Length: 137
Ligand code: HEM
Image (cartoon, rainbow, N blue to C red; front, side, top):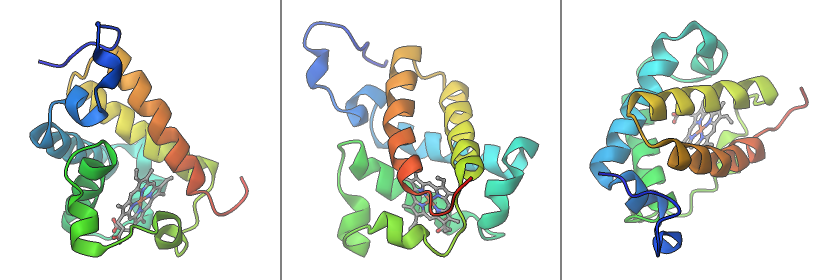
């Protein structure tokens, strides 16, 4: 089961460990894109993505595995992520950022990740998502 933030020694744990490894990250990404694909609140962010989300699922899984502190699968395969540059072709403002985060928090809830881990991970991902904004509003 998941470790609790606040337990003695837990401050040294990575998100990768807190989440429970690759299978959990895979499941998180599956839920994330399932929400994006079906929830009307995510229509805007869904419209930016390709019709077939298979590659998106694989890339986000690989990226998040490394970003959370696990094996650097994305970098090993694609090199430096240059994440902001890769998002430049897409118009990302506050609404797209918030919809992306909505899908991620819904996915964490569906996976029943503990609330303290959900809050910390959401805060950290919000920073990345906000950095992706490339237009006002
Ligand atoms: C802020 C809102 C965001 C929007 C609207 C957005 C949208 C997109 C779109 C449209 C693509 C291209 C289609 C695809 O390859 O799936 C993409 C690619 C990607 N996004 Fe995002 N994204 C956002 C935030 C993030 C965040 C916060 C992360 C990581 C924590 C992330 C990680 C990735 C990765 C790894 C790729 C694949 C890049 C590649 O190798 O081509 N995105 N994103």
